[in-house]
Amino acid sequence: LLLGGAAAGVGAAALVGADSLLNTRSTPPLGETPGAAAHGGQTVPFHGTHQAGVETPPQAHGKFVAVDLAEDVDAEKIRRLLTLLSDDAAKLTQGKAALADSEPELAFVPARLTVTFGFGPGLVDRVPGVPAPAWLKPLPEFSVDRLRPEWNSGDLLMQICADDPLTVSHAARMLIKDTRAFGTVRWTQDGFRRAYGAEPDGTTMRNLMGQVDGTVNARPDTDAFETMVWEPRDNPEWLHGGTGMVVRRIAMDLDEWDRLDRPGREESVGRRLFDGAPLTGGTEHDEPDFDALTPLGFPRIAEYAHIRRARSDNPDEQVFRRAYNYDVPTLGDEGQDAGLIFVSYQSDVDLQFVPIQRRLDELDLLNEWISPIGSAVFAVPPGCAEGGFIGETLFP
Ligand code: HEM
Image 1 (spheres, protein in one colour):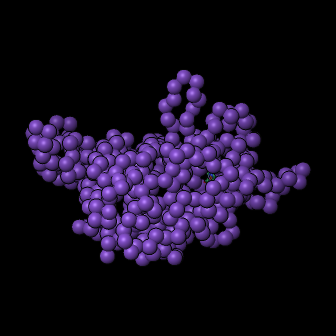
Image 2 (cartoon, protein in one colour):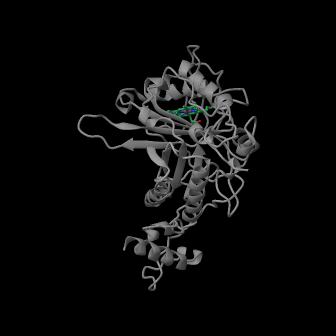
Image 3 (cartoon, protein in one colour):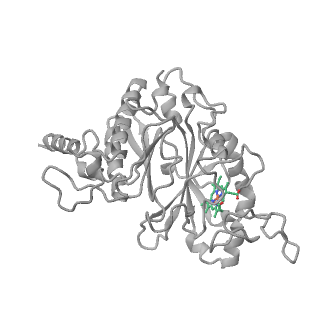
């Protein structure tokens, strides 16, 4: 019975073409499924030189799922798993039902769905003869870290993002089902930004501390971005066209943050809360003047300010940030469990990310209210052409 239902669902999905996805009819003729409204029908191509979900303007919702592979999963099984996953991700991102989709109607609103795969060291090591990039390992320990094992590491990462939470949930369910015979879910992190349409496109996101977060970040269509994210550097050949990914779950102590006054909050970062402009004036995207002094002779942007500490003149020390907020329900007097799913893309994690995190570890006033509780590093392989699969370059 169950199988019959799934098969019928796949059949119905095949009947629904791309045109009807954009159709907003409220009473579809028999045999068709109501499609998505203008925005829900938007798709991001799955196939291409690079995987989607890195350059893609961040969608409103993001789910990060890390899977641990079972002990008996060898290279051949990895290949099968990646083929399955790529096939379903290719379909779902285009608003089509997954292969054995039990709820095919949920697939018909892609809402810019992207699925981005990342490989942990535990996956790459299982493919004989394939070298791992030197940086594909846990980050060094930092004194600010309060890492909990349940948020660390993972063999396979799926970053599932869309502008609709139902779409994300369904895609995740389909993809996790694909992984069932190969491993178990190690952790899942749910993140959000403003709802689609709540702010004009291109508005920099706000984090839960109220700060404008993401102002100084390379734009995907620039040379700076190309170098930061896609430049192969010393990466092995199978990773060319791909990049490195850091996922850090950073808890915010919002109750303590509540006790700080507004000037203190602005000084901790070096930017105004209202519009994200530097404390030395201007508007959000104006350059901060790090030499400016207060009338008393102190630096206007303090030595301990996050933006002073995070900035580097070294062109190698740059990362592309694509973070999401998290806020998990709590009970009783547990206090709020909220923070930032910090995600950065860079082609060499050791060269680009680690020195920044090291500086922030040494001095950053924000450390008073934030603590990294999870940390993972993944290699994001290149994209694939139609008929190919993500990770195929591991199997030349
Ligand atoms: C800038 C917040 C963690 C690297 C900023 C800004 C804010 C902010 C408000 C200023 C606006 C902007 O340019 O985006 C936070 C919060 C964090 C966090 C709340 C943790 C919960 C990190 C981490 C790193 C990082 C872990 C990297 C290791 C940067 C960089 C900039 C920045 C590179 C731009 C600095 C510049 O002006 O050149 N962050 N951040 N941040 N942050 Fe963070």
